[in-house]
Amino acid sequence: MTDTRTAITIRRPDDWHVHLRDGAMLEAVARFTARQFARAIVMPNLSPPVTSAASAAAYRDRIIAALPEGTDFTPLMTCYLTDDADAEDIASGHTAGIFTAAKLYPANATTNSAHGVTDVAHIMPVLERMQAIGMPLLVHGEVTDGNIDIFDREAVFIDRILGPLIRDLPDLKIVFEHITTKQAVQFVDSAGPNIAATITPHHLHINRNAMFTGGIRPHAYCLPVAKRELHRLALRKAATSGSARYFLGTDSAPHEIHAKESACGCAGIFNAPYALESYAAVFEEEGALDRLEGFASVHGPEFYGLPLNDTMVSLERRDNPVPDDIESAGSTLVPFHAGSALNWQIVQS
Ligand code: DOR
Ligand code: ZN
Image 1: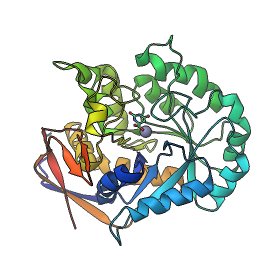
Image 2: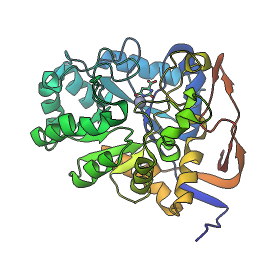
Image 3: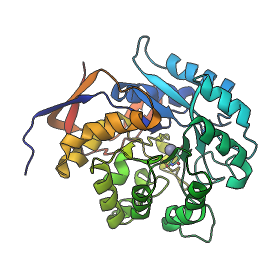
Image 4: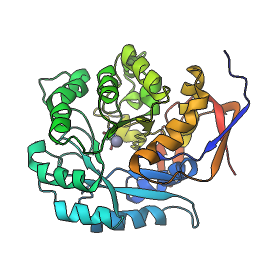
């Protein structure tokens, strides 16, 4: 049945996976996330990466300083795990409220992951400690083996790394980030309540054809790459199912236009400016607008053991054209949905 509502009001959402960058790019993009979300889990893949509680606290201050005075936005910081990760610093940083979680990047899986983990065996003491204190592990779930087809890297990661990991550490809280496959959905559905997943707007909207429509489309390129249509459909079903194990994580990953439109274009889709509207379109198409609030505003905080936001946000049904590009603080960025239109718009309070 067609949804005829002209407005919806939900608890203010959070973004459980975002790249806010640093320096000029941070100045350019932070406001978009803060306008849409109350809190965000901020990825630590800066150069150099955020590997200590001290560097995370300093980065958190830079994020807050990049926002207009009085902005109601809380950055939730993460620790970038390396082979030399220090269990003591990570655990005490978590207890002190600096680190909300720690991020596992397999070495060389994606942007600024060269310092990532070469073998999970190297960080077992850290993971054991995290399990003991209830600190979530956030996982970029792709193997990096050049013999594995890029479209299979997530599914192989489940078999080789994630499956064994949850057998070894059955109580570790894990967020399988930006899932892209039906295998990931099956994995999460069949795992215990300590395993959850984020789903991006772009993986709900595009399949792998989007990278090649009439030519090569760098703005549809991200990691993990979009997969076949059957996977997109599985993700849409999971996100809109009402299951508390799936929640919003945009993976908004801005790169300057010239770094995307290049002979070696960077991976990442900048979706922060229209993120909630983009998710709303999917939930409406799936006849599940009633479940948007759970996905966007409830399942995430419940998984992380954080309070729900107590303010609300409204979306109105109206034509919401997305510009071809956005100029912000000296950067030019191409947003997801550039040149098309969404049919919901956040009403600014
Ligand atoms: O597309 C992506 N971009 N995937 C990632 O995992 C990293 C991100 C980035 O930082 O640009
Ligand atoms: Zn990411």
